Length: 318
Image (cartoon, rainbow, N blue to C red; front, side, top):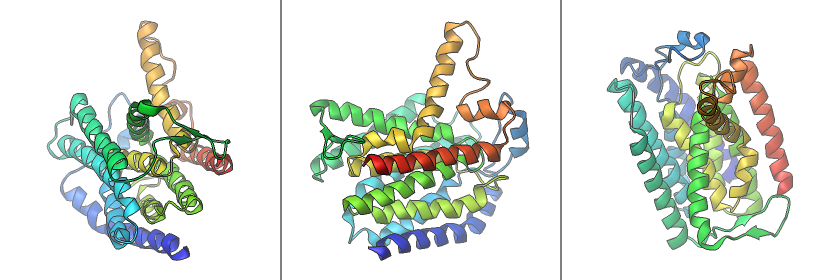
C-alpha cells in the first residue's frame, strides 16, 4: 500500500520538476504570455508576458505516472478521461487566446458544449463500464447514501461542471489554485486508501505534480497554469470524488472553489439588480481581498489554511 502512495507522488513530482526548465522556456519562445486585463488589479500588470499554459506540466506528470499504474489499477481510467478531457478544452482555449492571439478564445457556447460532452462520456463510463453507484455518501452520516434515481444524472452534470468552473475562477493569483487543489488531492488520496477504491495512484500523482508545479508557480510565478491546468484540476477533483461516491464532500474540500464561483454569480446579479452597484470590490472573491489591501501571498496562505482545515473536517465527516 505504501508503494502505491509514495512512488506516484515522488515520480510525478520528479517529472514535473524536470519538465519545468524545458517547458517554460519553450512557452516563452512561443510567446505564450499572459495578457492581464486593464480592469483587473493594477498590481497584476507586471505579470504581462508571464508564460501561461503551464497546466501542460501538471498533465504531463500525471499522464507519465498513470501509465505505470493503468494496467494494475484500471479504476484510474475514468478519472484520467475526465481530467484530460477538461484539460483539452482548456488547452484549446489557451491556444486560441495566447498563440493565435484571439482574445476571446473558445466561445462560451463552445466551452459549454465541450464540457457537456466530456461529462457525458464520464457518466456513460460510470454507468456502462463500472459498477460505481451514482448514489452519494452523506457527510457525517456513515453508511447513509443519497440516491435520487434518475435525478442523479443531471446532478452529476451540475456538480462536475460547477466544480470545473469553480477551479477555473480560483486560478487568479500565483499559486492559489495549485495550493488549494494539492490539499484536496491529499484528502482524496487518504479517502481512496481508506475506502479501498484503488484510485490512489492518480490522486497521489496529481498531488506530486502540483507540488512540483508550485516550485514555478508560487509568487512571483514564472509560469501560470492557464485554463489547461485549472479546468483539468476541476475535472480531477470531481472525477475522483465520484469514483468514491464522495460528490457531496466536494463543497467541503472544494469550499474555495464554491465561494469563488458564487462570488462571481452574486456580483453579476447584484450589479444588474442595482443598476451598476457592486457587492464586492471585484470578483472572483480573491480580488476583493486583494483590493482590500491583502497581499497575494496572504490570500493564498489563508485560503490554503481554510482548505486544509476543511479537508480534516471532511475526513471526520467520513
